[in-house]
View 1 (cartoon, helix red, strand yellow):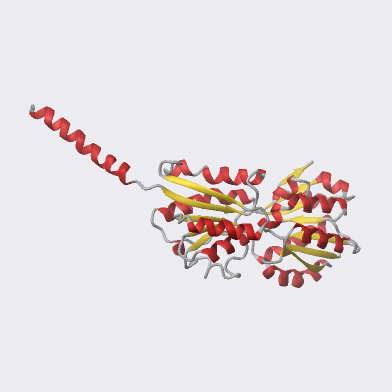
View 2: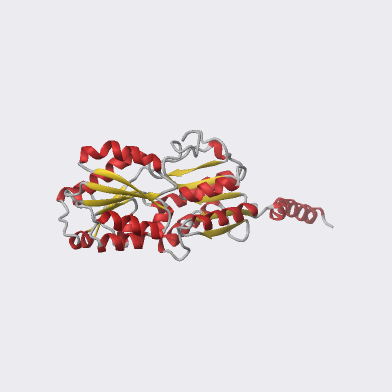
Length: 326
């Protein structure tokens, strides 16, 4: 073999070795995702799309170096626990948990597999993490609401429905009890008496709303929770039928006919969650990644619903709205 040909052959082979070795050694990483809403829910599809939109930017290709196992459990805590246990048993490299009851089930199932959460309210106050700056353990992620936002919801209810003097605080009975003291503390300043409406399923939700709707000057404030989001159409229908002014925590309720929402856009948390997952898959520890708090809140008002309830939306409130649905 001529010397030049040999050098060319040897050089080309040497250059190819690292790529061949990388291709052979590249391990397919496995991500488990558990959401407390239905797979065919329009919101679920938006969240999945946002989550997956980051993969190509980060060098991940589905089926080549990453697989994602999605599980859906709309509004059913037993189903959430079942899926959480199955995900953990499948030994994924990391789990994405969306919502407080989902995270609780995943935490029960594992203390070692890294977890990134989205849509968790008051993670430090509820003991999910040691602190926002230094989460500790195997968990980090993206918070949505702190208890202080209760004042904003009370204000929105009083502005859009000034006659309201009693407000049911609709929540998952197994979550968000930390918000109640803030409602009771701030309620008198708005002339509103808060009442705890903790529910565990659709039947309890309907009974609770119907039982309190007979009170004069009654309104509702719905707290953020995947179980309640999964039942949002029932919630919105009851509010319309019983003519109850209701403040919701997320835009998706108002899109489905709810009156007014003030909160974050949950979909916005799924793309950055993919970046946290990428960092952990590449060696970062969840305990070293600070919990991210939301920086953007939005107000959405449905004027058609306001008209049906006989409410005149103040111009001052319309002027602060980020979106008005007509």
